[in-house]
Picture 1: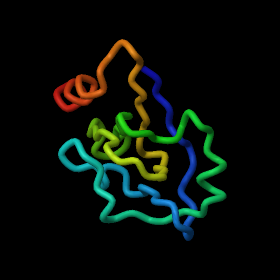
Picture 2: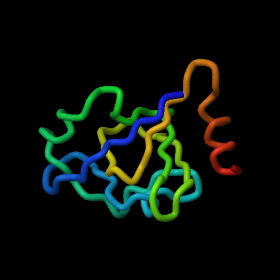
Picture 3: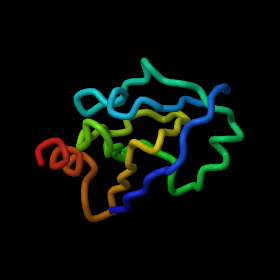
Picture 4: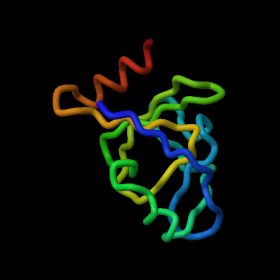
Length: 105
């Protein structure tokens, strides 16, 4: 399992989904794109590949109401603010199991 945190604020404007509200974008184990901002394509392209969320990864709130997980269940370009950690399950742990144990600490 790899834990990565993108340690910078989101830029505004553009066409790529940006989860900026931290835990407010995570509801009952799922992502909520209802209150998202948009970031420029250039901002998204500047993010290192291993820090880009992919389907099957787990996002985990780490500030404020910390400890709230959500599985990435979409195939769309998006990024997130520094208040969310990215967990990438290894081949030895199933992502749904990781989500469940994070939901029940």
